[in-house]
Each structure stands twice: as C-alpha cells, then as structure tokens.
Length: 260
Image (tube, rainbow, N blue to C red; front, side, top):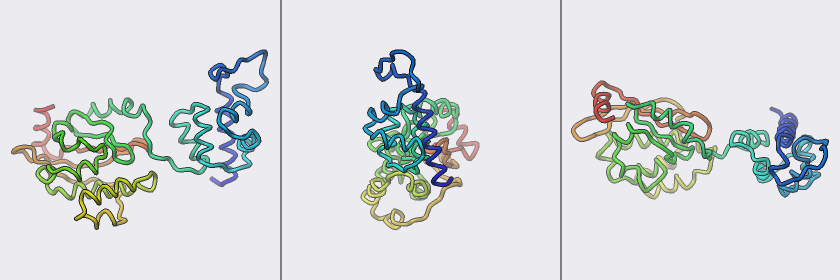
C-alpha cells in the first residue's frame, strides 16, 4: 500500500471510529440534533491532547503522525485490541507483540481440547500465559516457576538437563523461533537474561540464525518413562504463540492417558 493510500485509509478509519462513538459515554450533553454523528473532531482532539487542525488533517489523509498520537487517539476512541493494531498498521507502525486481556479466555477452550497433547500459550516474548493439564503432567512445576519467560525459565532451571534428551536442542530450537519474531517487539532484555544464565552458550545468543517454521523432536524423562514428542509452534495471531508437543509414539500417548 502506498503512503498516500495508507494515509487516506487511516483518515477514513479514524472518521468511522469517531462517528460510532456515543457522546453520552464521554459526559457530553446533547441538546437538539447534532449535524455530526458520534463525536465532533474538536471533541476527539481535545480528549486526546491533539491540535484540532492536526487532527482534521489526519482525517483528510494529509499528514503522517507519530505512534504516540495514534495511541492517544486509540485510547480516546476506546478501540478494541484489533482496532488499535489496525490503526497502528495504517500509521506505518508494527504491532508491539502485547497480548490483549481476553487472549487466554479465547484460547483456553483450544488448550483444554488437547487432553493428550501438552501445550502452552505464550505471548510474542515467549512469556507463559497459560498451559493445559497435559503439560502440567509432563513438566514438573519447578521448571516453569519464578520466571514468566519460557526461555529464561528453561535456561535457569537446574533440573532441565535431567529432564530432556538432549537438553540443549530443545532450548536452541525455541530460541531460533524466538529470534525469528524478535524484530516485532523489544527483546533485548530476554537475550541479555539468556547470556547471564547460560554464558557458555554465548555463540547461540549472539548468532543471527532464525527458524520460523518446522517441528523438532524432544524426549522428556519422566521417572522410568521416556516420553517422545514432536514440538511445533502455532501462531493464532500476531501476539500469541502456542507451543504444542504432540506425542510421537504409542507409549507416550498411553502414559498421558493414564495421567490425564
């Protein structure tokens, strides 16, 4: 989409969003009939801390503006998560990878409908948002507590080496997929944490290799059992990632069936 067309689309979206607003929701008393549906331009500009002329130019598709201005307009117009993302995209700004508050509620049924498939819901930074019962059965809780970020939690776990065969492959494959998404959100603190926790793997953290797709095998030791899974990442939207560990053999499925 060209710059001129994007600005026109941005202006049209702002106008449509403004016109659907109810003045009463903003404490604006309406006397008689208003010529403009929704809120007036000057009301939106005032509520958002934006100059009236500048806002008018935005709706007319005449100017480019900052992310901060668009964020302020999104708040004033009480946009949904999806509407805010669309507004930012029209303004030329990438999604920030922040999951909305309803994400876990929307995807919880999907997690729970995989009774024999361990799965975690992650945000774009690989912070753990939720997991299902199968995941809790396979992974001892101490491995994933204390650090909300999955990569940091695994890298800092003293038990990981005794659980995974081989331990480093699982962590590396996750990191490659994390790196593939890291241009869409701030990730420096996660990489810095990995360097601190596992300095001997600095050649990984400093590399620029990425892997967006594809599955990889992992073996988890659970007592006397060797559980084999095929791991993959699914992306239901651009703020969420599902880590799915599909059982790779009949013995693993039977082990899960007895415990879930």
